[in-house]
Amino acid sequence: MSDLRIEPATLEDMPLLAELLADLFAQEPDFHPNQAKQIRGLRLILEQPNRGRIFVLRNNLRIIGMINLLFTISTAEGGFVIMLEDLVVRADHRGQGHGSRLLHHAIDFAREKQFVRITLLTPDGEGKLLDFYRKCGFRQSEMVTMRLIIGGEEQATA
View 1: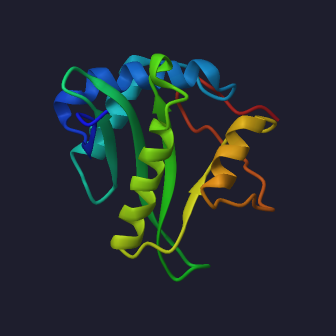
View 2: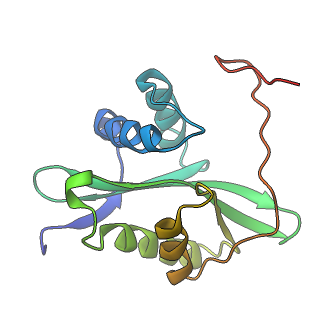
């Protein structure tokens, strides 16, 4: 475990990150794996660090997991905030504390850079995920997520 390190992702990591995202999106009811879209999204973040950061947990052989943080401004908070977009660990490495390690790294990064809030979405009814985030200090919001798809493959229905 001593060879594990967390560091910023690079453009060269995109194919491996897309694999992790495919695994994540295969488990989430609102999203579907699409390598071209995932590579495009990853590139948009990695080429413009003011948009966000992607951190990876890697050993000498491969990437074990990733966390994706997107930056925006909250008028409610009067400052910069983070949207935690993706947190995923390879299936064969789950249950070993790697997700917690990535999340705590993100929280430390947010504090160091003086962000005032981290927000995330997680599938409703996923007891293990809710418990995981609660243990890390997150609290459930009264806000309801709504989405309007503009363009793309999915179309909004009335």
